[in-house]
Amino acid sequence: MKTAKQPQRLAIIYPKAIGDFMFVLPALHTLRRALPETHITLVVKSKQAPLALPQQGLLADKVLVLGGGSGWYHVRRQLAELKADTVIDLVGNDQSGLLMTCRGGRRLRPAPHDCKGRCALYSPFAEAMPRLPAGLHRVDELLSFSRCLADADPVYSFKLQLPAQAVDAGEQMIAAHSLRSGTVVALNIGASRDSKRWPAESFCKLARDLIAEGCRVVLTGARAFNSDKHYDRQVIEQFIRDGIVDGEQCIDLITGHDLPPDLQLQRDTHFLRYSGVPAVVVGNDTGPMQIAGSVGDDARNRTVSLFGPTNWGRYAPYDPSRHYPDRPDGDWNHVLCHNTGCRPADHREACKFYRRGCQHKQCMVNLLPQTVLEAVMSMVRKS
View 1 (cartoon, rainbow, N blue to C red):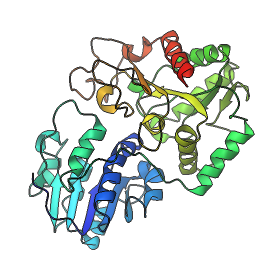
View 2 (view 1 turned 30 degrees about the horizontal axis):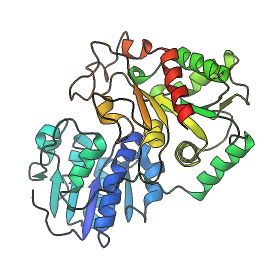
View 3 (view 1 turned 90 degrees about the vertical axis):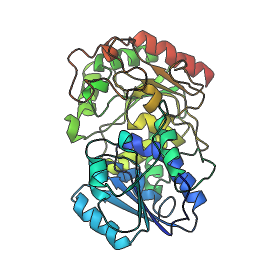
View 4 (view 1 turned 45 degrees about the horizontal axis):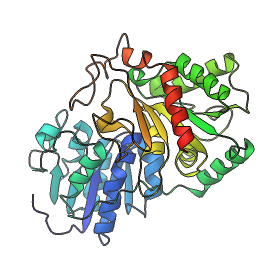
């Protein structure tokens, strides 16, 4: 596809999850640098809003939020009022396809093979972007899409502008627990889907073993997350019942504060990515791991990612030193996954039970705490 003339008013449609917002940042940085005079509108989902809204004026001139009382029809009407001469769909699912039904200007969407649901049917007159080659990390897929608008060198930055209030809350929390002393390992204990979660008892065992190794353990996650019945908070209660949380060697950052959920996520983003406090961050395939571990010009943190039903080559925190499928131990992000027969292979995104639930969850259950401990301590020694 040849690059058309530069758009004057560009709308980027990207309603996905928190981790997905990290993956799109290099593409947004690339487009912002390549199109400095273009008015950019970014459409995100409400769960992405705490990270996306602070980028208004930096990576986008306008951020529209889908959800939280603002449905696709309302957002589509806002897009029509903005009169964008170019609209690009970076997702290719039903929600983004419905938004692409707005009229006027050039419209681009993923090739039908790369779309999900009825996206391609909702926007039959949109221009299909080139089909994606197999085996790309999601970051590189999105950069490939961005080249349809600007043939520019990619900017591998995941830089996030955070509100001063969030940075202050993070630094106050760090000072309150004296977290700049000792070796701190952060454990992010949740995930949006049950099939991606390492068992709570395994996290408890890992925490005890890390403390025995002389590390301080910090527990992060969402205090309130309705879609998973507040799973993170329930796991913290198990840590407390088992006597692991003591406020000194094991610190709970999930409960015991009155921060609104958006500010808590922004505070944790500062802590996990920019504070320099955790020597290693450990967690499942979930947003906070992408926040902590995505290697870019702005930050390089050591992380250990626990993968099961999803393809780590596509969704693990971006680390250019790690190569799928032969090298899961990147210089900065080490991926651990148990070799079960049902684990996604080749270029499949996930196993067939990822969304509809798995009865045995062997890929996560059989990932032993001792294996994770050895990987973490190896990373600690490098830090």
